[in-house]
Image (tube, rainbow, N blue to C red; front, top):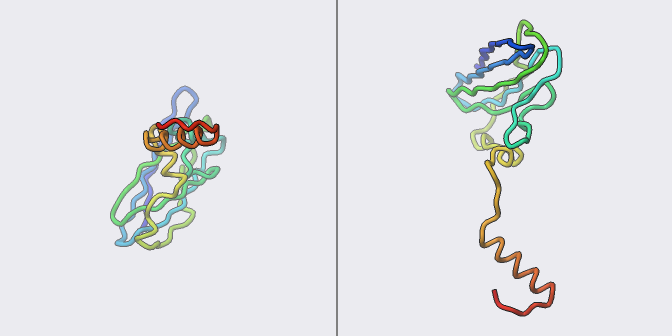
Length: 135
């Protein structure tokens, strides 16, 4: 069973919503939640990239068996009752639990190419320019 516990805090015209979604089942669950605030949502961001698990007012993700996940969002809209609702919850295969490529990229702190990649790129540039020097 998937359960949600949502609370809000309003100050200075901003509503901050804290959500805890829990999976009490023995199998992973793919969950879709809807934030019911009636106004624009300010989604969490990492390095300026909005969390790709959010699509408009809905959050989608997979919750591992007997685990919880915290989710947050903010808005200038006043709190509603309920704050959040479960749109869908379905069992998924254990091997489908890994994050998508979009989520993995969004979670990277700061991407930098390795020195090996930079060395290969320099070699390609020299070959293209006709430069026969060795690296």
